[in-house]
Length: 178
Image (tube, rainbow, N blue to C red; front, side):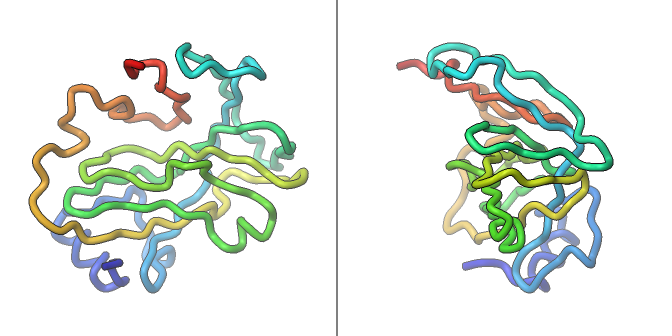
């Protein structure tokens, strides 16, 4: 079950959902719009290794915009910091973003109950497109959870993306055992 606008507001009032900053005008019928933060990153190497720590270079998006290029993976970040203590958050691109040929995540659109952070975006584009800090980039949708949670994400000792940040975070796949 997807939470409605009224239910999202109720869950915010109860402290089960936290969105900072929160602006009422970003609340949709059953979602909350999130915005592109000012930080982007790209991998230093064009060949990535799943068993290695692939380093990234951070940079700020100029106020007058930055042109994304096809065939490059950009890591972005939401302006909004979120916490979700009783629901499963899903991040999806806005239709207006998709109509510009921008994908905001490759596979990581679902958060876990207990995720407390900004959202790192895996941004790619179909053709060159100019983006701006603060532009609407996606929307959060919240699903109710059936049953009790045994271990919240923010309490897992092996959770790889628990450290609060305002900058995009590179893949931590290399921390897995395989």
